[in-house]
Amino acid sequence: MEAACACSTRTIAVMDWSWTSDQEALREEARQVGADAVERFARHNDAWINGYSKEFAKELAARGWIGMTWPAEHGGGGRHPIDRLIVGEELISAGAPIASMWFADRQMGPTLIAYGREDQQQQFLPGILAGDTTWCIGMSEPNAGSDLASLKTSARLDGEQWVLNGQKIWTSFAAVADYCYMICRTSADGPPHEGISEIIVSMDTPGIEVRPITDMTTNRHFCEVFLEDVHVPRANLVGVEGNAFRQTMRQLEHERGGIDRLVSNQALYQFALDRARADGRLDDPLVRQEVAALEIGYRVGRMLVIREVMRQAPAGFSAATKCFCTEHEWRVSEFVARTLGAEATLWNDITQGVIYAPGYTIMGGTSNVMRNIIGERLLGLPREPR
Ligand SMILES: Cc1cc2nc3c(=O)[nH]c(=O)nc-3n(C[C@H](O)[C@H](O)[C@H](O)COP(=O)(O)OP(=O)(O)OC[C@H]3O[C@@H](n4cnc5c(N)ncnc54)[C@H](O)[C@@H]3O)c2cc1C
Image (tube, rainbow, N blue to C red):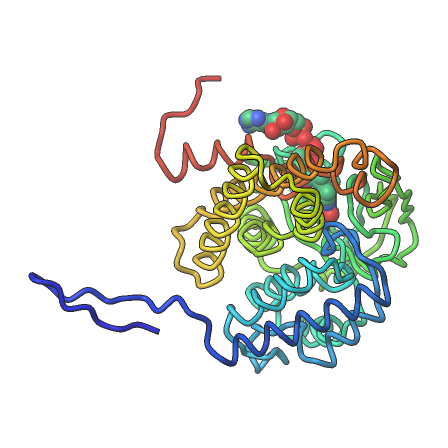
């Protein structure tokens, strides 16, 4: 909402920062749903990637909380992006298990709406909206992470089929996913970033072998995916052949600018803060300063995210939002470790949450790479000579 402020020389539009009563009611509802989910399914750090429950996804679907902002003609809720932000903020802060639907809600659905054909939208969107299908993203490879254009997994056209060969790594949920949004090389001609395409692969297709990886935090969402002569219908190519680089960059804007980048360890933070309050450590001026900095950081991060979801940030700015927000999450984990001391080293979900922190600044593009984007694309600084 905007109001007008008459100043001496001109009239300035004034933003009303308060939440509406409908937004407050939605937040309270989401808070209750999140608390109830944690009771039933346990609390998860970084719940949008670590907390997997198809049962809960279907409950969210029944509330219309999947595809909330997608256009109504595609079966979505057509709601304001702030509504989705509120629901996401509350569910992830609580640690409710939303991983089974989050990737598809955040990325694949909007990408299919933007680039998919009508038959693809009809085939894949209803399953996502119902909370029935889980999707994974096959981008990273053993020798292609930050430099996505160097990926080698190939898709060769053979009649009406794509034939895929290669290997992906760090593919979250590949072991339980129904579909993989696979980024493949469809041409070796021309500049590397021009020969890659996006292909939807059903994970039960013969020739796919998935090997889960247990990381040092005991999480098991990571997988290696091996593809050997995997035949996929030609019709599963999304958008324009060879245009994946541009399409994927658009997907990454969805991935980098959302509230999930800020709130992933809020439950841990509240736990540590309550402990510090209970044992009098908040009387220590250094601890108080740290808490103040984190509280300010959270609010600044949320403003950046609001600007992203309202589509008011400049193109590419999600790199700055991602960098700021995930480095905030890292600082939260350092605060938790310092505040809990020895308790943070016992093997429980607190330890898990603390040692997981570097992952925030890696997934979806590392902080180094985000800074390159900020320097080169947003600020127009000269590139480092190679
Ligand atoms: C929790 C988590 C979930 C993930 N889920 C998925 C998933 O579902 N699907 C998927 O495809 N991938 C996933 N990834 C992988 C992720 O996208 C990659 O780890 C990331 O892109 C970095 O690639 P890399 O690990 O190969 O590191 P590299 O690219 O090899 O980078 C190594 C180091 O070099 C630095 N570096 C690299 N290039 C530059 C440069 N140009 N300038 C400055 N520094 C540079 C990096 O910042 C980093 O410090 C996930 C990762 C994490 C942590």
